[in-house]
Length: 251
Image (cartoon, rainbow, N blue to C red; front, top):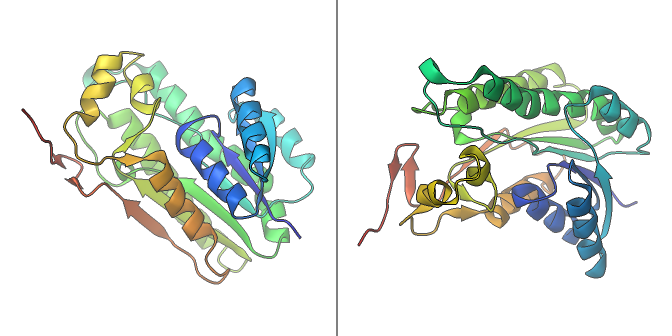
């Protein structure tokens, strides 16, 4: 029987790359994102190369819509909670509470909504998997990143707690925590559309991670034998030794 994987935030970046790789592994992939045209185009691309995908336009923060989606899903074997992002780089003293609220609603509550809605089906599958896509920011704070780091710390805490709560159930709880990943939209959104500031994040870095690198880690973790749980995988580019220590080639 074909297994079903639900990927949130599937319209671009890591979510889209993960959906493509899961489809290549034989999963029926349900693509969830707010941008209908983007997920429909991705579903068509996956179908063209022989995969199976369904596009669902949905806001992960809409609790009732998430519940309705889950009720209409026949089964679920894998949930990848990828939807989220960062907004702003202001210090705590000047941060906009609205930006923090938006990050918590998407990063934390969005993951909570989908996990709560699909957990019964994941357990019923007999070998379910929940993947929480956090960040190295979930483990190390840095200046200008308090709101994002706080939301990712919350996701990390939720992941660890959930693993304890379902320890006797046939479901794995996996956390993937990427470091510097160069995608089309992450930094662009963080800097309010300022392309120059977004590009400066990766300037001179030899070989930052790209979406496909993180997707590869997610899919590898998901496709391990059911008794193997990858509790936490931290993945960075070789050039990034730590949050603040990044090798850059200048001149």
